[in-house]
Length: 457
Image (cartoon, rainbow, N blue to C red):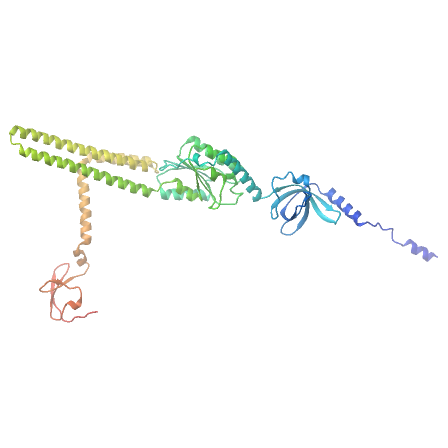
């Protein structure tokens, strides 16, 4: 009997048994009570849109996925249409669907994440600014043909400014460059860029403005998609050239600017003239000027010849003396006019050249040197200048003649061989026969030779 009593005392306690629905309900309460509203980032997949208006989808990353439900009253507040593959941020309540015992998120709000959100904001701003007319072609200003100064809005330490300065130095180094420094990426960069553009427009130290930065992602370039930058470019009194990112990158600033270039280097190409083209144009202008001066001198010379013939036909002494005085006067006027025209054209040419070199480094020293050269030139006089030019021309022609002279060829060890007595030049060995007399002309002297053997290679 005692053994039976002991066995009854060792029985296990009464077990608490849950039904499936009770278990799921309890688990749901635990989950919803343990987690507040949270933000979850992931990619939409398995999206379902039943007629009820609710949304059912999975939110996944590289390693896991979770089921999500978003009810109709929440969907109506969305500003975009969710699609499979879209990367989103979801504000949700952790919960459990009791009917299947599935862990899930009850989503209250979603928004696009990363480039998707940026691209949507880009498109919305682009449409609004286009409707306001900020992109209209008729409002775009032409670029100056020969800017006196070029401004650059960019980071002073980035690769873009080095590329721009390299191109400007190659194309037209005489044009000065002003850098308006600005942060081109990160918090506050858009405000700095807009401030730099407004500063350049207000100061008007330059004729054209380059707004540039190197390549990067959409997020890196986002400062140039801000409305404050677009409106600063639109309000700028200077022509604006943008060179932002690479060929495939387009920003709001590109649409507002007067000219868009694919890269910072291409923007520098657009904003600067080519000095070789200008030098060629100056050479053509100089040639035309010299031609016109020569033509005018020829006409004056013809007039002088005609006057001389008339003078010879007038025999009375008084008439002859009068015509002689008149002839001297005309000659003096001709010489004076020629000098005046010559110095006037030369001054014009000097002025044009000075415009090219006005802003080079050490320009003050260059101006003093030019002033000193002008004083020295005036001291020596026009006659010495003419004689010097004639002497240089003679030296150049002598050098050219010496270069093409056959005597120079003989001086290098060659000889001119001719057959006697006809003195016909021999160009091939077969033109002579053994026993023929030949003459070899050297750089110094001649040789009379007799042919012993003919070797024809």
